[in-house]
Length: 415
Image (cartoon, rainbow, N blue to C red; front, side, top):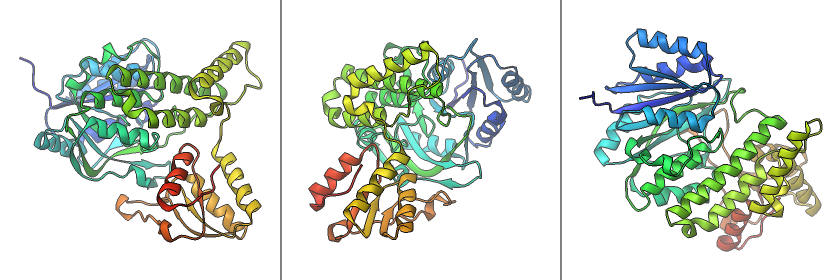
């Protein structure tokens, strides 16, 4: 009889060998007993193999699996799942790390509440060590939520609240992945939005079951790494991102239809789809091969058929700033309230102040906040506000504008 393992921690590695030890060491600091670490090298890596062997020789229960070539993050995670023996699975990217004994706390919480998926808090850390979190990614303690509830949070935030769909801030019962290959092809090369597809898959298995819980404990430190997939910005990398986005959206829609609940989420899924398609930055290639240009055209045609005419016009944060500034200046507005939760809101506030426009208040967080408990959210009493409201949002501005109109009978300035 094989040894019972409480947890399998899957760590995919691709060109992040220099950060792998920090990731592994953070797991080893847990007080949870009986677990395994599975390192999946997504492509041949002598350095990754060397590091894995060092830990194995020191008695760490670590499996090392190596792909013969780069197969993508989705495939790396699935490889780890196939090899996992733990009752629960945790995904940990090799450039991130955990703290606060979170796996032990999440495991104990799952056992005591019967939760098959347990979420915990994740915060961002930049390369200067500064930590911050956006308000919509701040969790509170809860139990007995359904998969449907979680899916609604994903789509209603249009994936901005990534705390709900990210892979790496959860303990997931391994049994939820049992038939994943019946729905998600194991041979698909996917680096972005793979967590959206995988999380939707797991939530659908708990659609009407109150088996999701969360603990308000900081556990996952999501580091901003210039070499990571999400941070790269070249024509080729952006092309891959756009292709991944298209494939992920098609996969999610297919999953919702297969489980018979697409109509329940259609409205917000379509808004999410449009947001993703219009904010996946890809520009026409100026110096690219014929094959790359053909790939670009294919992406744009696919976008048109999926997201409509608007999806062809990509709005960057910088462009959004220009549009909003122009509208405010054109209308001669002198006092505003800014509603936004990203760098767009902060940058816009600074620009308006330099132009002599009084920014009464805005909803945002500061990247200099070191503790999640010290975050101060400034929100105006919108129902009594007489000043102009500027919505600093790219993807969800239509939805936000409608809320202001419906609830406060106020028109707002948007892009």
